Image 1 (cartoon, rainbow, N blue to C red):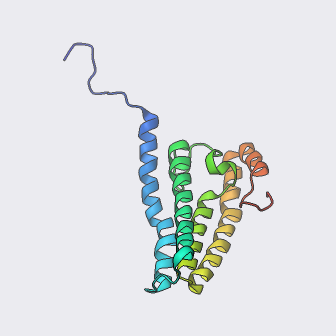
Image 2 (image 1 turned 90 degrees about the vertical axis):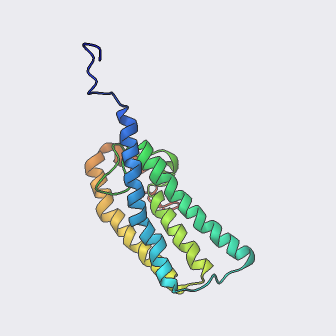
Image 3 (image 1 turned 60 degrees about the horizontal axis):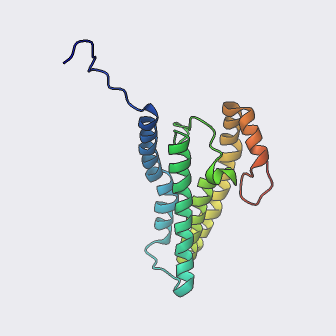
Length: 177
């Protein structure tokens, strides 16, 4: 060892380490929360039912499920974890307000992705149980967004979130609020 060189400290790229940690936490969150909401619960509700569609209807329903999953994965991993340096979990939020990617068009694309994946399962299994669950999930998460998440974001992000809220609709195609 050369004199004057401290080998105990090796500089690292803190942004990359932080992003890697956010990605790993997002994997865990994704398995636990959306995995349960869009995966396990619809699976349990269909109770061993086989695919009830066929042909083009089956392909379309599976494409809808895949689209919902991709929307969630894109916004959770690229938007929140990589770009925002945080996770979708409220206990490990992003370091900055994420307004790029799909968040440029709608404030809640992860929820929409989950809802789309559930809707595709309701179609592919022709399940009224999954359809009722979807309606319940939409109502529940709408209340979570309106009464918990948005007031928190107003306090945490201030004018930046107010501006974002004015420009981008909460749910695609619906009036801004």
